[in-house]
Amino acid sequence: MRAGVFDSGVGGLTVAKSLLEHKLFDEIVYFGDTARVPYGTKDHKTIVKYSLEALDFLKSFDIDMMIVACNTVSAHALDELRKNASFDVFGVIEPGVLAAANALKSKNSSVLVLGTKATINSGLYQKLLRQKGFDNLISLAPSLFVPVVEEGLFEGDVLESTMRYYFKDITLAPDAIILGCTHFPLIADAIGRYFPNSKLIHSGDAIVEYLQTKRRFQSKDNPTTLKLLASDNAEGLRKTAEVWLKGLI
Ligand code: DGL
Image (cartoon, rainbow, N blue to C red):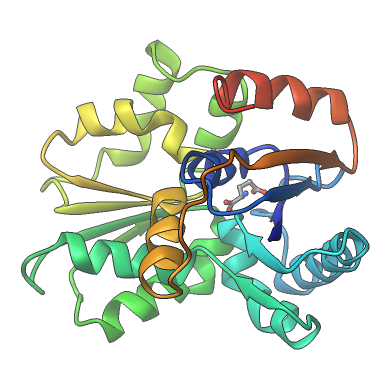
């Protein structure tokens, strides 16, 4: 089975990493729209338009299904993608919400949702969490985390002060934190040190769990091959993949 994995740029490699680790597919065709990243600052219409163009592009690789690694696209364009595809299209938001609900014992638990401006403003995480009975929610769009991660600053002063800036008003540590942006798993250790008792929800792990339990996908014996495609600077994507997916490709 060949899965198309779509992201606005390089960040979706964090989701590809979980998929590769669990060997769910024979092949992953990864497309990062590096020419037009970030999507998280764009409006709904633009995100849908770019996503449909990515779908058309991925269709030419004869994929059997599409996984939207990007939270922003999952929040804004999933319905349109599904309407225009003859195969299954999965996003990361519903799996993330299910993973959070599974990780929390009480409906009174507090959940901090982190995502891009477009993801947070869509209100989709918040809506699905409320439907599951979680009302104690805080949502934040720490936009500076994205360039900090792309600079490779997974720890150190810049990241620490960026975290202090965004988290300064959070007086009670949340019970769970949804890392609702492809880049945030790369700073999960630092976020985990800031909030040592919070459960961290990673989109990549969440979609793997969702595919395995809800869709009965089983791991294969052979490793998944990975084809990397980018709308700009394909070499940059390949180099990032060599670092982030070390040992898997
Ligand atoms: N991939 C995006 C997401 O997960 C983050 C980067 C962007 O803004 O495009 O929401």
